[in-house]
Amino acid sequence: MNLASWLQRRAMADPARPALFRGRDRVADYGAFADRAARLAGWLAAQGIAPGDRVTIFMKNVPDYLIALYGIWYAGAVAVPINAKLHGREAAFILGNSGALLALTSPGPGEALAEAGAGCRLLDISGEGWAAAMAHDPVAAPLHRAPDDLAWLFYTSGTTGRPKGVMISHRMLTVMSLAYFADVDAASGEDCTIYAAPMSHGAGIYNMVYVLAGARHVCPASGGFDAAEIFDLAKHFGRAHMFAAPTMVKRLCTAAKATGETGEGIRSVVYGGGPMYVADIIEAVGLFGPVFIQIYGQGECPMGITAMGRAEVADRSHPDWRKRLAGVGRAQSPVQVRIGDAEGRALGPHEAGEIMVRGDVVMPGYWQNPQASAETLKDGWLMTGDIGFMDEHGYVTLHDRSRDVIITGGSNVYPREVEEVLLTHPGVSEVAVVGRAHPEWGEEVVAFVVGSADPAALDRHCIASIARFKRPKEYVFLSELPKNNYGKVLKTGLRELLEESK
Image (cartoon, rainbow, N blue to C red):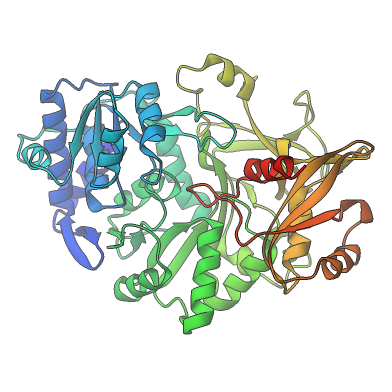
């Protein structure tokens, strides 16, 4: 089962259907999309790229990204997408670790990779080499691949060390895509999907769903996320879908409040990749209506652990709606999810432990890293490293990464719980909570705050909502929180700030 066969089938059935767009401008219909992918595959084979070889994609969000991805698959090779925002040296590490023979690049990322001394051939989509590839004789059909053959090497964000290559098979992506229709949302040929988040990650990994549906694929002309541009594209195309990190949803809300935009044309926003605080999603639904869908996954189980549909995200009538909104939904169809203790034994309802998952969306391991694989995969279960609990109805609430839990005086403090409380104060726009070593209590709670609130007022606010031992012992005010290229707050950086201030 080669995922590229989905594109071939769509092109055979409806070649004139609009497919790829840069902004409002159409770049290719499905016939041309498939033809260019097949030509790239023919060119790759002529360059000595064999089935199973790795080819990196280090591009900004452009329509040729999808041509590159499907061309690699047509050839039976493995795609190694790299976030275009990474430094050239970071990208060069991934290229070297994956053993890639070729890097397909766009202007900007390509130069950065060349300056970093990449050890393989580079092909820039703006150059004559790409034009030659697009003129090469096409392969007749996607090369056959077994279900467990690799399709995608997904490199983790590396916030706690060197990124690891998650091995993702054709089977995993097939099951993930079909689960989208069962557990996340519908999709049709009348829809469009807007790639505003990096196509190397959550936004791009859902592309297969919309190829299956024959929908339109829209890359913003800016190449990234701009709230005004998203509103304009959604109104122009209608029935717009997008994947968004929580920081992007927050920026959409900020822009809408400033301009009066209503989100016209937006059909669904799937959010994930980090914590969406209750106050933020309540505001988002209030501004744009029932268009938001929650997913929880990891690179190790791409987009595939739990989900909460638009009706539940927007529901305000259920007695437990606020508790459920603070969670991440229920297990998706292809997986089993449970909460385990330190030995992996199942815990009961509302008991906090590590979130564990198994099923056909879970990775077989990390690329050439058996030690990390053995630490993460135990008795068939993926140990996510996330702490949470499940209620008696199967709803999962995610507390924090296990490494982020603060133990003070023998009691656990989950930073997200404190962050949720602080964010309800009008003088706080962003917050991140970490632990700091304390000689008597083991750790103490410290809150990094972006906003204008007074520390004494924040103290009173916390005391009114949570136990005293959970309230921060210090508030550190910053102009902005440090984040990685995916919008996730870098708590390691905050801990370093605490160390430096000693």
